[in-house]
Length: 132
Image: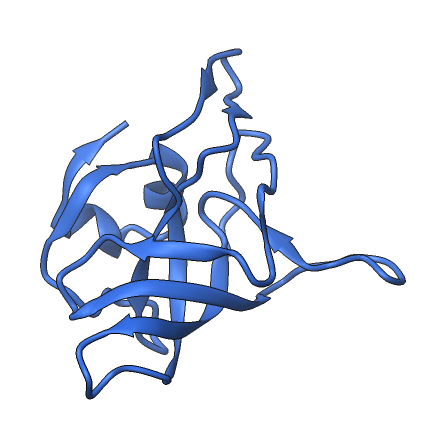
């Protein structure tokens, strides 16, 4: 994965619920694991903006419910700091469902998307309406 300039505070642990921000038919996701997480003994894996996570579908359309998907976190409530000193936080925790090739499953993203997620996953920028 590409390196990002911001020091993102990892505010979402395993078990956290995320709102799905695209139109894939999924409404709520639950984090199962975080890809590329390096921790130590008894440390719970956690992720932040622009991290790739493995999620279980909690609610949504019947044919996708109880399945495991990959997702990219695009918003988090916990504030994080950019390289220019600006601190950013959002109203909710949200993610976009992606395929194995890191291509978005939906065609439209509702709400703003953090700039850090777009620098790491450029295919999300094509369907994003607002970039913050």
